[in-house]
Image 1 (cartoon, rainbow, N blue to C red):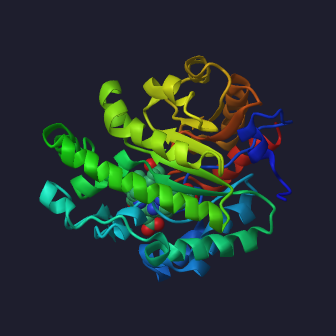
Image 2: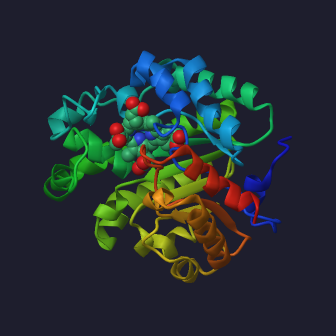
Image 3: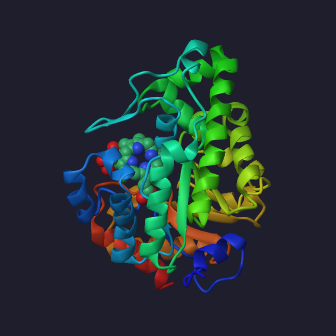
Length: 339
Ligand code: CP3
């Protein structure tokens, strides 16, 4: 049994003395010990080497003592496993040299055997669970099918993902075929992650907010719903949709255990839209971690007061930024523990 089960209890909706806390992208470039490993190994070597991935996963836990760990990996290991080449270019980000732009391109996209292609993730999970010694739960994650499609079609990050939207609006059949292949792969992948030891899974719909509410239903939400349906009886599912406040009402009735919100949606509005019953996670502006530590603590206490201590998981509204001082990240975590 897991000794610190605050996070699991919050996901079940049980009353707690204080809410649990973790930070999206908590294993990352703001940590000097992460940068040390980063100098020696390229990105996918770090993901594919269980010793490295598990070490990076526990680095922030050792330093700050969050209430949950999130496995170090990336959402783009899924397209890689589906036979779409993904590179991580220094000072550029993800780069997919052969993007999917037509029905013809789709022919080479496979729904892979998970253990053959992503067995290294399962090994990293087992090794991480050993290092965590049942102290706190481990979160496994995947991108939403729409967010993965964005990279597969655009071929790189983008402010508008115009080519990804273009495929959806001009060749909807091709887009849906790709979304379904990603969905099938993601379900098999997350099931295997849970079998390997992940206690909770989170779906990152980082680019869901690029779609209109109507298009969101067609190109993103229906696939996330398939993933929730397939997994909810095996582990709690958290859905984080950046910019997706407009879909919160529907999301609250999906069977997900918690919903992530970003900092553009107030606690009051998020509670109102979700009917006050489901656990919410968020939503500190990641850039607000640049404020002085005393200010961070005050703002965190105010945030907890606004969401309420129950049915709430303290987090940022998106991933932590690389330029955040370590002491400011500590103030964020400590503020919750002192609450
Ligand atoms: O949360 C954690 O600590 C676990 C690690 C994690 C990474 N990526 C490691 C990573 C998680 C949860 C992700 C998810 C991810 N990856 C998302 C969804 C979450 C979000 O922030 O919206 C997305 C969209 C990606 C795709 C991706 N991977 C991008 C856009 C980049 C480049 C970012 C940049 O600023 O360079 C990556 C690379 C990446 N993934 C890094 C890390 C720590 C940075 C590169 C490096 O360490 O060399």
